[in-house]
Amino acid sequence: MMPHFDMPWLLWLLPLAALAAWWGSWRRRRAAVRFSARQLAACVRPTWRARLLPLLPLLRAGALACLIVALARPQRGIGEIRTSAEGLALMFVVDRSWSMNERLDPNEPTTRIEVVKRLSREFISGNDRGLRGRPEDLIGLVTFGRFAETVCPLVRIHDTLVKLIDAIELAHPQSVDAGTAIGEGLALAAARLQDAEADLARRNATESDPDFRIRSKVIVLLTDGDENTGEIPATHAAARCAEWGIRIYAVGIGGSRVLTVQTPRGEQRLPMGGGFNEQLLKGIAETTGGLYRGATDRRSLDDIYREIDRLEKTEIRSKEYTSYEEQFGPWAVAAAGLLLAEMLLGSTWLRRAP
Image (cartoon, rainbow, N blue to C red; front, top):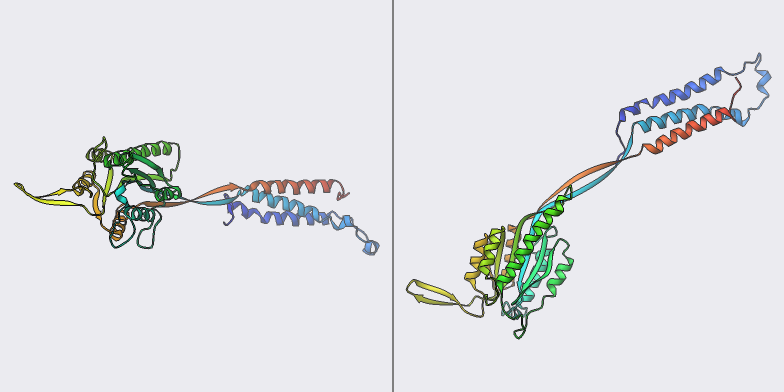
């Protein structure tokens, strides 16, 4: 960075230092001893002391120059770019029931949970198919079977989160965790989001320039089953999310098994066991102002993630600051040192009698 002076106009006084050096030399020459004939002193060789006499006015001129520079207050600029963001606080809510071990697409060997893991990682970190990544956002992970569990709280450093997504284990059908408690997963994620906003507000109160603000709160629900257990119904959890301003993007994984029957009120589509409840997921999304989408293969789930990524944008702002560190100290010390040297030499070794 270029040198900076707080009072640069004082630098116009620097020619005074050169004038002081000239004046000192001229005054000393006028004080020289006069001889009646130059031949009397021509044979006398000048000593080192005599040769160094012009050094005294130079020392004084140097001291004056250093003092002028110090008074102009030289400063060293330190540039800094601060980035602030308004982004998402997002919780993935992933179904870990055993049915997620089935193939998402009969033509591909990958299971539903494997596809969810892969595309969730790419949503966070980005890929070359349109997902730009979410490096600035707060993202966490909740999984649910019969019980909901916070696998990772909301974090902005996502390395550990990605590893935890890879480590999701499904609940065996014979285990106590077998079941699909969608409401429990939504309620736990909503509580995490609500707490995160309060924690961030307390942290911002102690920071003069907080670097992150929650712009929106979002839950991405991924399930392939119908709600069949849990103390908190999904509809009640969705109502609480709407009250707290949390949008739910509900994604049904695999095929929705629906039976179409004729009733006095017309044709009715009734969800059957073994698939996700499309009507329930639509209602959850609509209650919170979010979206419902169904994913029948990897490509459709990829499209859903890209749609969410487009809808939920993070605004990043960069501001450049420059702070200045005072540098007049060395110049003032140099001025004092030169002046002291001139006074000591002029009073001792380089002292002149006239």
